[in-house]
Amino acid sequence: MTAGLKPLNASRDTLLDRIGRRFADKLQSQTSGYEPYTPSDPETLARTLRPGDVLLVEGNQKVSAAIKYLTQSTWSHAAFFVGDEVPLTLDQAALPATQRPQLIEVNLGEGCVAVPLTKYRTYNTRICRPVGLTPEDRDALIAFMVSRLGLKYDLKNITDMLRYFLPTPPVPVRWRRRLIAFGSGDPTRAICSTLIAEAFEMIRYPILPDVTRAPGHAAATSTYSREEILHIRHHSLYTPRDFDLSPYFEIVKPTLKYGFDYKRLEWGPGREGP
Image 1: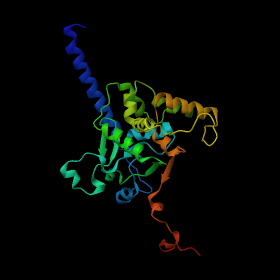
Image 2: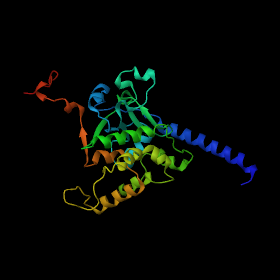
Image 3: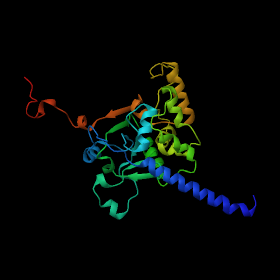
Image 4: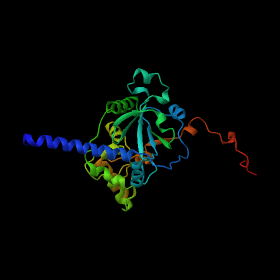
């Protein structure tokens, strides 16, 4: 490459970065009309979440609609709870627990960041808890995620993001998840749950069931399911839905965790029944 071409390439990279950033900003913008059925209470989440839990979120961004459609799921985002393991500034350390950054997530345009529980106070969420983690493996998971803070993703591959501007592409169900695999991969990793899945793979904790049946293990039964699982594992394209459907993660509901007694509910007028 000649010296005369270097400034041209540098300017082209800068232009692609700018275009990619603009596309990412548009995809991260919120859509109107989102109304959560049971919005999360940060204080209750703080009491319920344990380090190592995965928090699924029903997002309302433009990219969320595409992810929910392509994965046939209500969950479009996943974050990893590390508790007080995020390095804090003095100002952050003085904040209440719900306002301190305790979740680690990957966002398009931002990369890997730490955010507080209050970020999702107006969203439907679900807690997915890995069962039977040893203290050593939990520490390894947390250390892996904390070490990735500040990680950035390449946004110059514009075609990787274009698919998300068409929230409901007219393709058969079996091809929809494969649209996530289209392109070079970096913007895909910035949207999907690859980083969290990578952390669990590091400690050899399963997310999806076995492809072949073995005694005492969950297994995929249909040919389509086996092909999907193999495809996901081959391309490391785990999505939030996979943690929800995993036979190895417990679904934890805060309203039930601390003792729910339907007899103590107070119904409004006209709701007492006969």
